[in-house]
Length: 120
Image (cartoon, rainbow, N blue to C red; front, side):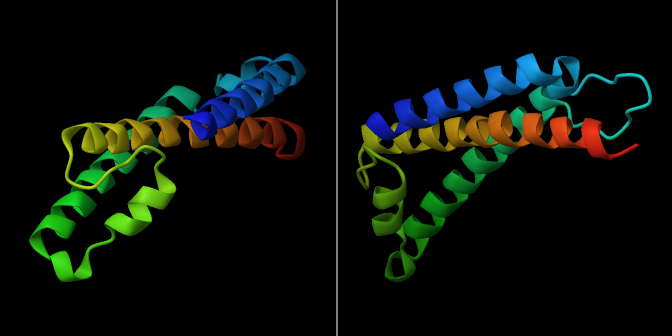
């Protein structure tokens, strides 16, 4: 649980710093003359759903082909994940979804900030 809290805190600090530095460009709102912005909400939902669906596909693959299973890797990447338990499955799915939002909260503001500064 500590890594999730750490990642959330880092994402929040970076987002707040960029929000105050750039304003609307961090959120992906178009400003005068700037058309290269990524809408953060759309990116967050897209990445989160992509990672959740990928997690479901991988768990299904592990169940269908146990000799090629990767559940040991999932246990290292997803804190609290335990193979073949309902709680472990739910934790893995939730963490996959949260990691998508984490990536969006870091990537979109950074891209939008640099895009608004250097791309004209």
